[in-house]
Length: 176
Image 1: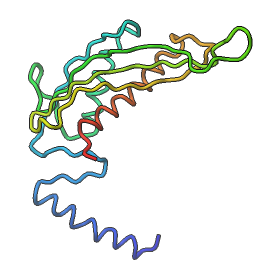
Image 2 (image 1 turned 180 degrees about the vertical axis):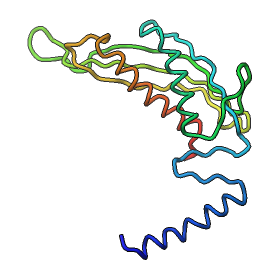
Image 3 (image 1 turned 90 degrees about the vertical axis):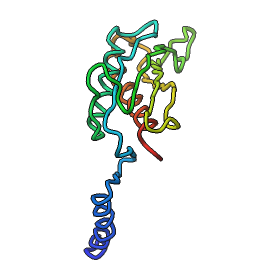
Image 4 (image 1 turned 180 degrees about the horizontal axis):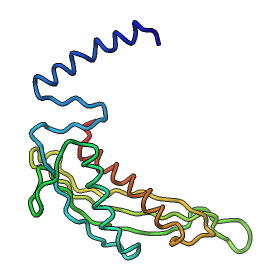
């Protein structure tokens, strides 16, 4: 990249940053678009309505979502027992293991299995009700058919929750 091109990019972006400092408007390049009046959020403890899975799933998901919001926004947690400007609540509604690809031969051994978890989220934006939603988010983790789910469960739940937290965050706070 030549020096002229780099300098011209800086000249283009500089007024945007100066304007944002003067007007209170936030410009972000992460896709997050939060009204400057919104200061707090709350995450009510998610519940586990799935019939299977580790007993700590709901706690883990609640904590993962809370930490992700804290890391990726300037929002603060509402005081204990109070609702935030943005409210998250919900439940883990599905936890299932299914065969993905049956193997050949007479015994029909499953070569791969899939763990799918579904989390329903109720999001309330107390500043703009049109942005509120109730939606289920699902993701999966494939693992060898020779393993049982308990052998991969810790890693699988981590990978699945990482994606569902991201999807939930994007739906609630990204304005694409």
